[in-house]
Length: 298
Length: 220
Image 1 (cartoon, rainbow over the protein chains, first blue to last red):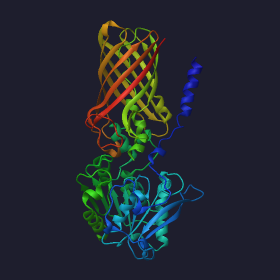
Image 2: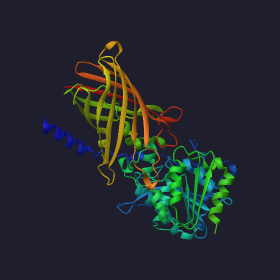
Image 3: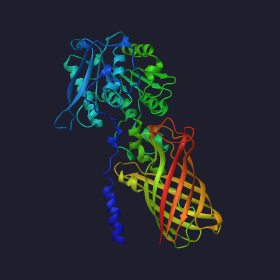
Image 4: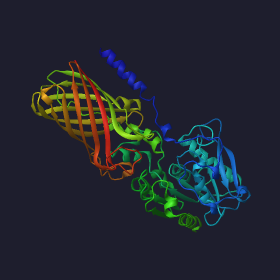
């Protein structure tokens, strides 16, 4: 009998690494084609016609993205809003979208950024991480960072320099934005904007359990903005909805902001805004002014 | 996004993945094995579902008033976390086949099998009242439970402000010759706001989380 017990225990231990939860983190959705303004699915908000972008200034293309450990690249889809020929002189916002589905969902947000300080004043580049939208491959934390860096490689090849690159992360996208400011690869962004950032997987776990529980109980993901931000010295703008019922502005955003020790930090809390509601609650004009003023601030 | 995060974080809910243990202590030298199923109820894909956590365990009556038990959280183990609870169920007062009070102090012990510095111990305790209607063997019960977090800081050296998580529960135990079936409804995080949160708990007025458990117990 004691041998049976021993075998059962060993079998359980052997199985103990079989199941992974990390892949469930990614809320990806595939598409047949990007519809952009014609997209009628769920969106956080829809802009009126005054925000329209001329089709000549919308470029959809693929990039090859490869993590250091991969032997072959993954094709990811990106959209550039602006004149590609002017990247060598323009300032560009690299937008790292959140965890929802694909670029069609975030198209309105990208358009809004393309209207900051006037229509197409800044170039805007955003991408679907691997596994999202039409991008190939499967999502992973390292893959996500590689995908954003692939965008930087493309921007650099078009003449963009560190000083004219602004990186903006929303929700899950704050991981890439913070990581690539903390540990720059191809380009070193000159400014960092985080909207509704999370602090870390550990804080997600502790918010849910109320106990001092290690994040490792749940996930191997690092996504540790609260620690990475300590290496960020570039000017930093933190925006968060006070009614964010998903990522608590106190336990997540405030911890990130508190750990920032760079040259200039600014925060903007939006009354009544839940996760994803910041631009609409703050008002599009005020939102554009906030982002624009931060970008042009010397 | 919440749906996916809920799955991701489901492993953490294992903390509350067992019903009250041995509300009515066993007789001296009586032994049982048990299997439990259930957990907090969350909104998932438009439906309210209990997280299907499982435990397997063993208990023995140390005397007529004290039962010792140990349980392995089997679902948790499948996700590379070793979690056990060790405890005793103590009869405080009882009138045989009528009613009684019991307490159940325990230690909840957990560690990740993959990560360093992940060992944790949370003391917990139950206080239960049980009642045998018409002096039948089966009984109803209700009780309070609390988990204690004795740490002063949490992630990123932020202060840990929550030291007690109060819970309440009620249930019914069907007694057969060799088998027992235990059904329990719980309310976790009594009075604690469940928002903001990455998990959509089903609570009451955005407080706490309801839960459901089932236990199958076999006497030896």
